[in-house]
Length: 123
Image 1 (spheres, rainbow, N blue to C red):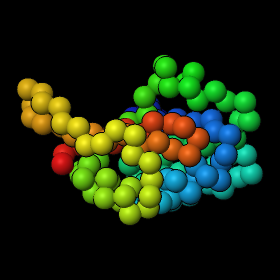
Image 2 (image 1 turned 180 degrees about the horizontal axis):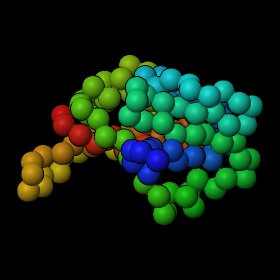
Image 3 (image 1 turned 135 degrees about the vertical axis):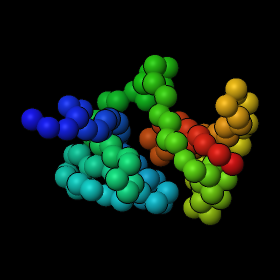
């Protein structure tokens, strides 16, 4: 058995409105990599992949108390521009954090099912 033991992290978000959540990520440039009735997989290039599973009774507010959904990007400004172009809800506008290694910027976008999606990276 060669290579690394673990090859990828593929989290699965539970959502009430599966189609709306898929459309949200597609509007941000992601693509559908699996298209089942109650489960769909979303990916971006070879660096991001995650699942979206339909769950009628999911309580997103409860999930958000324990979980942060964050995606690293090369340009937070480019993501912000795309969100404005697609009329996506920006819950937290551009914010700068200064660390020992330099500045990092974030925005938080609200998904159709109520998830806070944080995009973090260079400006």
